[in-house]
Image (cartoon, rainbow, N blue to C red):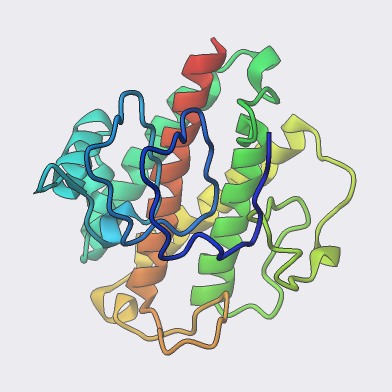
Length: 244
């Protein structure tokens, strides 16, 4: 099967009576795509950025419907948008309880198993270590080098020029991952325990840089951590259900 990578040759193109049956799109830009008279049976869309825009299906913006359904499936998820210290603390407790249930309920033989090109549970926990390091230790606490060596960086980071020497080459054991993950969870818990509205309003720099004008508040950084936690919990539960 042909793979098209890092191409813009399809931008603005029109496809008439073409078949994309069984095709896979990853890390691609499909914003503004118009589909008319198409067969979408079994179409599977997963976008972490879904909630920052709109998705029209038969003239209906389904983003609010998807958001509401995910909040129903994951009680406490709605608190990832909380603006108060109390709301963020409550949201953190909820997502950690949900993660505890998933981690404790995963049999050892599935810890490193994964679906196609998705991350395993072990890799996902390593990525959440990275997310906490970036947004708490780097963004909020402004540590010069906040990243732990077992962190799992996002796909494509090396091609973007990210310094991969920070990370270990040999994979950590699951026990080591759990220990570092627990340490990072305690850091967030301890930070939120004393966080005030005034602190949450303070401005910080984007820990990933990028040269944009966005300067998140401390509260924004915490909300990103919560969004990462809920999003990756959904991915892991989805994949574990398939693996089982």
